[in-house]
Each structure stands twice: as structure tokens, then as C-alpha cells.
Figure 1 (cartoon, one colour):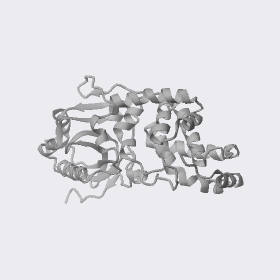
Figure 2: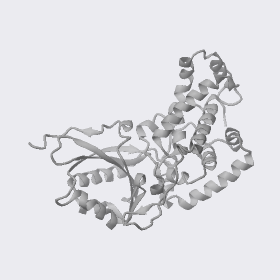
Figure 3: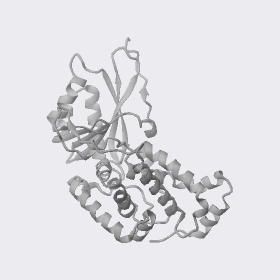
Length: 348
């Protein structure tokens, strides 16, 4: 693997007499460090916090950088240890919770068990490819960021997770990964073997079909448009036609999972139909984690504007929706969308 010349960066780091000049060196790496932290933590908000913490630690430890590795690798090491420290801290520790069917029965789901999982807007992923000649500094592919992948690696122990991300996702050799984690090469290889076995067992079988994609396909975008139109019309028949019979809808924050087309439609019915329907819907397309998604906005009776309710992220197989992952609207501003949409006066 090629390395960027260390001497000019080392000299620049040494010469950084104030935080502003040091920030000029680190800022080009901010977006990719956020993606790195997000993969380990599974949470966009915490990843942003940890990147800021990483850059502050790098400033305080700048005298430790001697050019033995690239400046980028040094930042990755600091970020990785910041994530591991966060995962070990009782105040920030997350525990996997069993997914529960809405009727109370048990239903296994990696996505629903990770209650802290958040989506990552594609518009920010597109900023994360650094200007570097290193082979791992590439456009972020769908296979390394989609929700099913993120949910599975959250089930790995923290150091095993970090070793897998550095070795198999970022693309570092085993020796460099071991140095970053303060582990032996043998320990890294053992951790990787266990992590890869877990992924083979738990990831969707069809995932390899779109591994190289960096954006939703046109067919997926067309299906998303049909899904959005049917949602706005509150057309359960049309929505049902878009779902596989064995489709699944998960809601990670609530650890809920709805198994099968019938269960999903039963959950939607009181929301969309009848005297107790919630109100009028609008939808806006977006892309997160390299998957098609839609933001849902609701205007309840008597209200003027539409208020964001959720983000639905779709996984498509054979032209139909195989899985819907539903999040709250908290990250819409990060995706460039408002929390409200202006509407006509409901009394008019």
C-alpha cells in the first residue's frame, strides 16, 4: 500500500502554532473520520461528537506525531480509540435489546435490536472521499454503509468491530490495523476470523448483488416514487402490491418488528384509513446509507403545516420492497430537509 510522504505533513504539524493552523490540516479528514466513527458506533449524532473529540485530542497530542505513519492513519487511530472509549463508558454504553413483534411475540431482527441505530445522509457520504492517493480513500460503496451491514457489525464486540472496520472496510493491512489498536497481528487475525463468520451468517443473502453500488438504482428510485405516491393517497392496496409477501418493517428506536406483508398492512391501516386516520400525508424523497428513502410529513386535522413524522428506508429485492426501516425525523436537517412543510390553510 502506498503511503503519502510523511515529512511535509510532519513539518506542518510541528509548525502549527495555533489551533486554526492545525485545523487547516485536519479539516480535509473530518468527513471520512465521521463515517469511520459512524461505522463503529452505528449512530450519526455520536459519530459527529466523536469526530470533534478526535480533532481536539489530535491538537493536544500533536507533538506525538513523528511521521512514523501517515497523518491520516494517525487521525484514524485517535478516532478509533475515542470510539472504543465511548463504547466502554457507562454513560454512553448501548445494550442490544431483543426485537419484539407488535403483538408481543419474539421476532429476531438485527436492525430492531440496535435501538441506537441512525441513518447517514448520502449527501454527507459524498463528502467523505478524501483527496488522497491511498487505495482505501475511495467513494463509499453501499456494501460498507447500508443499514443491514451496520446493524450486524453492532453485534460484534467493540475491538472485534474496530478491527473488522479497519481491516476489511477501510482496507488497512493486518500489521497497520494491529498497530492502530495496540494489538498483536495474531489477535487481529483471530478477531477478523470471528467477525467475518458473524457477517456471513447474518447478512442478507442477496446483498452481494448490489455490493458495488454507490447510489440507489433507477429501478429502486422508481419503486420509491410509487411507494411515496401510494402513501400520500393512503392507498393500502397499492402499498401492498409493492411489498414482498415476506417483507419486514423494523423500527430500531422502539425495537419493533412487523413480519410479513399482512402484518405491515395491519399496522398501517388505522394510520391511513377510517375515521381515526391520522391526517393528510406528504412525502419527500431522500437517500441515506446508499439506499432509497422517504421522509413522511403529516398534517393533522386543523393544522396549517405538515410536520415530519418519520424516515422510511427501503431495501429492495426482485423489484419489490423486502424491508422498511423506520426512524424518527431527527436527522432530516442533516439530510438537508426541513422538519416542517408549508401547507394550504386547512380551513380553506
